[in-house]
Length: 636
Image (cartoon, rainbow, N blue to C red; front, side):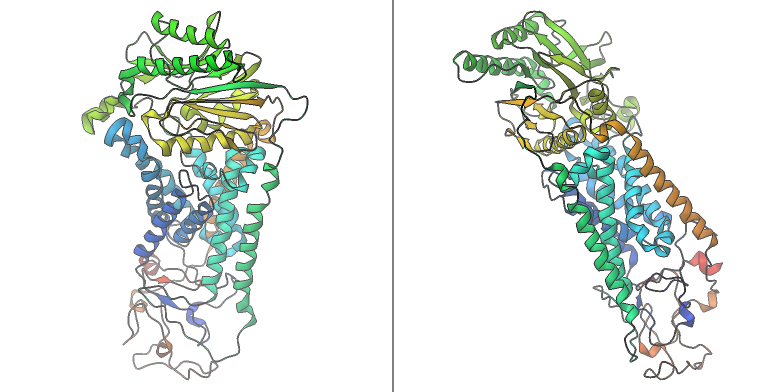
């Protein structure tokens, strides 16, 4: 028997208990309803709805509370399916989420970007398949469903964050929770714990919905589910599913609200806390799109001129002098180590402001097809003193794996990414005046280990340099949501400096200040405290993710063991199919021979020798706690 086939749970009654009679032995009058509702279409629609609900939980929509609902919809769609059916539903959900979420990537590499969401959706297919596999565990121990959902989501993200080509973590559940109380959990267990919390709440919602569905017949348009009713007194046990649903929803609300105190706190630094004055320069670019690099001198001049204007205001006493200034990624795409005119312009700005500038630049490699993405500390007197090389270039955005293959067989637009970035090896811990900063460049903010390494290396402030001119405002706001999570996760003040927006300051509680508009020139300034302490998340690092992912693997192993030991009802080909005169996929009182008013009256055989009891047909989707019997199971 195929352990990954859809489970037949003939001995599981609608409330999930194992001691129920098999369907063919159930007393007349209490048969659960069933219907052939076109399950593939219905479940596919639910899976697509799950992906869309997840989509609008992320910026720029920011409906964070829809993330658990999306998780619940996918859990319900895959429940009691086979592995491959669940995988297909997971793929639908992944594409529904990632195609619109990552649409900004097409600005860089043209149609080849479609391979990115397609490849990432494979992990959602795995999630859907494993969610289906653990159905027997969920049916036997209903309250395991929230834990199963939470851990499977963490496992999926742990894999997607790392493979292939170093992974691509965009679209993690945790990054949708910027305005949610669940964000506070980042200080305890980082992004994986926030994802687990969203998954847990989603699992509780799924449990509540499934409990209601298992406790009563359901009408699903355009197909009506007709169930046999009984004139006997109502069974008090039928209230159990409703009580379970109410308890699950109550726990979901409690789980959402409980972490809120972790985000409470005075935004003003405590007395005696060291502070620094920081200015962020958003110089803007002549036009959006990848070809803005052709105007790289104009981009550099924009940032120099905006800094000179700030220096003039400082000289006039209109604003305090900053301790250091941050320019964004790609603010100097002319290599200042090779081109003296670029170096002279940067030095002019640093001397005028009288403070070091963190310059985002490109450093040419000896190989003309390679380049380094760097953050350079530019001292007013000494010039460049320290350099951080971006450690984690992102596949298909900052370098193109299998470039020759893609160019030959897919699209020549792949060469819009003209040079591949070379990865650095050292965390971005840099000294800027009186502060030690943790420099993180662009997409690196999505990777747990890159940010944590900067903090454990001594960073007192998190600085994210980014260039959103190659994308759009939606991508910029999604990135800012990641900065918010990192600030809470490590208990550090943070800032994001963008060429075109959005630039902003973020406090250690995840609150955003001084956010700029998109595609504008702006300078924002703020006095922010320095932090040297470590949160629980900083201390434990990857441990919560490993524990949660291991829990998911253990649940899958347990589910396979339960399937192996399960008693699967054997059906012969001649017993599969609707009774005479019955509409396929429908059950009503005429399906039972005998007195419908007396449940104690046994059914009498009909003319063809059958009792008229409805028998599951291969492919039928059964409502009310029953599961579908596959053709393979019927043959066995």
